[in-house]
Image (cartoon, rainbow, N blue to C red; front, side, top):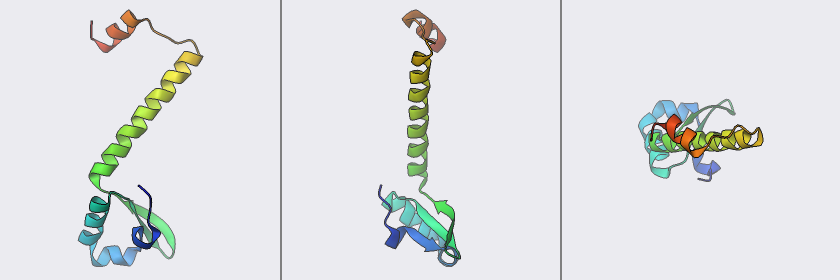
Length: 89
């Protein structure tokens, strides 16, 4: 998902004129669009599917990082303890 600055950076005035086009562009291209005001970024428009996917990936990476920290700090669970905690015994 590489940003194409020629397509994915638009002024706020374009959003005001045709918001539907911008939403469809973000949804169809699977890339976020940076909305600018006076040359500075003020908002990002992103398709819902991409937003949800990014959130899931971020939560997964946080869980991995937490697991690695737990291992480093010797906060490990046995398999039986983990199953009990997850409710799968």
